Length: 193
Image 1 (cartoon, one colour):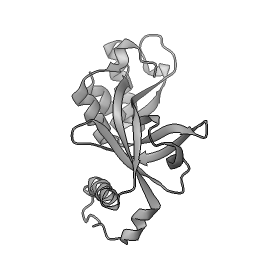
Image 2 (cartoon, helix red, strand yellow):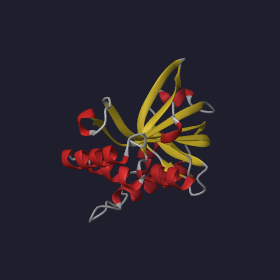
Image 3 (cartoon, one colour):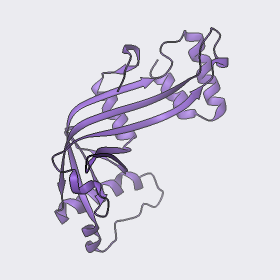
């Protein structure tokens, strides 16, 4: 990914926090020589060395992905930025947060490992509900998915949050984003100074 210096994120804690908060992304690999993308949720391993997830066995991506170098893209809040929001001259742009993760993928179909993965994903995303759903499904359903485990080789982080603009322009962008409902992006801009 193209990352101008002032948008680059190099702090590991900040990147890993972003991955944990924005775990739904695109798994990009090659299927029969053609680029292919699946949108799936990922979990970061506790040692922060791997991403795990699963694909439907009917998804053709799983058939070619074992031992392949892959790219996972994760995106945070984003929005159009109008130059009318600036006090100084500018051009239309887009503010956003993105992390790209490169690694080698391994597939697995061990039912116990798949069960742990599904229950971990469920636990993470159900935890915010007042009455979380408790995993209750036929074990045979695990046969319809294939697990993926990506050993991370490289992570690139880019937070394009008006860091290249004067402080007054940045403050006006935050105000306009807040008014237009892009609260999470405005919050990210405040946090990332």
